[in-house]
Image 1 (tube, rainbow, N blue to C red):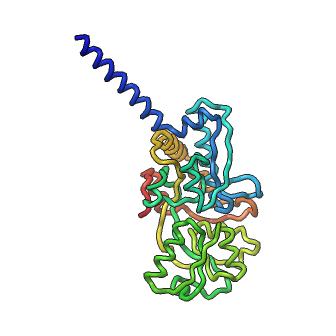
Image 2: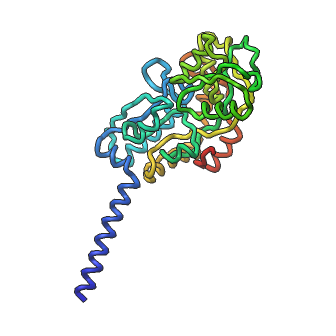
Length: 299
């Protein structure tokens, strides 16, 4: 009888220990934030209107505001009303490793949720849908993909768009010279300076770049979208507790109507720094996902 009691006690103790470890693993980011008293939120410098520096110093944008709401919920969940919010600029090339190594805790930019990235990181509910098109000079004869045969096409390092262009180039035998740039601003500059014929990128980002260029009328967004892909906030893998908090925050924004208000603010109203209205209506894919609240990746 004594042996049975000891065995049961040992099993119970092991179970409690395992449960505690599981609890910690499920909310590793929240535990890290609570113990350190700080959360590091990543932003992009030129992903208009999602996450960018409107005044050259402070991040703003659609994704940035959503992450602000998430940080409010993190404060409640951790009991840290005094939580310090640190910011970190990231690029397409370094955003994943900086999340994996703990430099940043959440990435609020314009990152495509796809299956390949899903092997390295985790994504929250999809909050936007876009497709690859081309930014060219308004005076350019380029109007479609076929017109890019033999031309110089730039895209940003570390994006899905550069992979899409490489595949299309190979599949259709377009003989394009594909260039890479460190960020969207540099990619656009190559087109504006004539060193590239087109900049391949998500169409909504191209509209933002065009709207805020020194001479907006000198640029045009052309071509049919090569594919449709979702954007989502990026989190570390195997952190179910944090993902639940982030997804729950987005769901609350949708339910309250605040998500739609934020959308109208950033896509259908004048935005900084130049007060340009992108006039981008909500896509059918996004409307559907406001009901589904899916985190389904692109292939």
